[in-house]
Image (cartoon, rainbow, N blue to C red; front, top):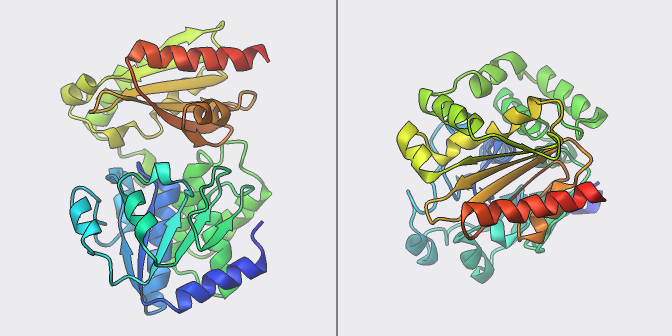
Length: 334
């Protein structure tokens, strides 16, 4: 849990700032998007100027959280502009849902050189100590819970828009309240957000019942690649770069697709290998609880949680698959 002293320091940083830059890890998920959206809305309420920037494009189903589409580093704002002082007017940087430089590609070098104060809000174990002030709670199911606790500590009123954003954060990082991190604290927070105006049915429809045809085609392609090992305990699937070109889909369309094979009763661990444009493979890992996939990911430079983690691997698909296969086999033996 975060101490009152740390919350006090965080509120002090925000109160003393006028222009605030906000970001999160690459491939932003619902927790990252929801937390930043809620924080931006609160900063506006407090009379501050919020400047959100994401390090890769948002999935389409999260865009409703923002009145204006947030800029993407490398697309809307170049790395050269960033290094040339595009955000020099900002007097505070808030990094949410990560505390690792490796998850802030291209932004990390600028962040290391800046002398501006940094507020980190995160719930992961992995830490590079990026922040001047850090609100870290590894018992929280989502970073959004820590942001919500910050609002409560400061006695800031939560609006309907903030409640919706927080609900997205909370529901996505718990797999719509299916994962083992869904505890009584999660349900109490969810209840508070519903009382503040969040409507779960509408939010679910916006996020999970609005697949595009390309995303559905990508899902079919992934399912057709299914491999089962260890008597059905380990599922592996893959998506190649050519699959995206053929279906008209993008990398954003892969979010949560890995969860589909976990519907198979025998599957304890799932891995999805996605070929990136540079030829490397992004491996997403999921576990139903017995296997710690965060340990597997961290062994190869990645990270995450016990039941959900990810890592980028060099080499061919077969080489990437063998690395993960051997690591999973080792945990099964234990």
